[in-house]
Image (tube, rainbow, N blue to C red; front, side):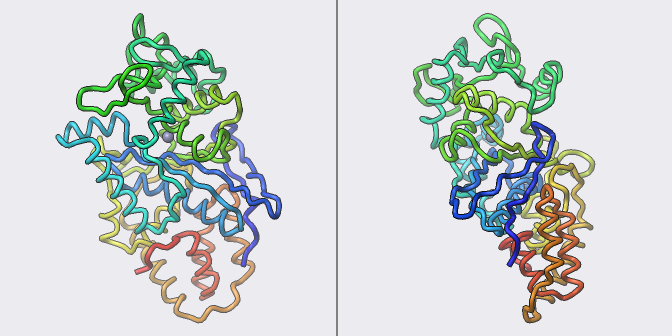
Length: 395
Ligand SMILES: [Zn+2]
């Protein structure tokens, strides 16, 4: 029904340029590989998360609609400090909280009509792989052991390049996030070094290792999971923009040190932040809008259409009136879909595909959808909705 989507160009955070995703030769069944950092399951189910995952869902659906195979991994970070801190505050077991919030995440995304990732590995199930990655980095001399096992940032040229930050700016961000740690004898050699393996607090999980009992650091978890499911080099690595530094910067350094292969990711794609009442939506600020709250006011397809009608790289403000407008668009689409399907307008489909192929310009694709609705082109509307709102319910 449509042109293959092989001409897609997306903005790469590292080079700050639009990168063409290499078209697969006809008959080449090798899948395009995509790794998106998933939730730390302690505050899942809000609009900021949904925005990121739906944007990648539109990307996957668009690529697949053009005949490309996609192998998609989204992990669950169920071994990480914010989860343990929340479990402590709630006085519940970390595993109980993680399982509960993971279910919320999957339930919300299912209602929002995603094409589920091919693999959703949980850190707690992948400890052996993660340990092995940490051990190999240590034996190759990229890491050292003091009160924890730290990655030695000085051994990797180009730390800071992905986030386009100077050393000073990296240190400032670590300090702001309380992640600076201690530097000195018996601790880190340099403030930018980060743990690959560390001891666990009494109420935290631990696993045996050659470095003693403990748990992995955050960054090595994603390196190990990405490589296990997608290989040593991947096509697209994605996530929210707040992950660029230090998470993705560190993931890149470790992965390329481990394999001696660069680039670890051909393209780095990052989504903007969703604000509410003028500030980034976050649990710590108490200004979360939950997916479940939005679903009480509008059909799932409208919630999804509203979220994806923003440019994926920009920050934007969640607004209830705009959600209501998206609900009216879905209502009109529903009435058009009652008409018999004719031949979809090639011009409309071309415009729709050109929009998404140009760095996933979803606002422009939504304008094409609205035009198809105005023209009562049921076939075009059906096609566009299959990518933009997926399997989310229109009612
Ligand atoms: Zn990650």
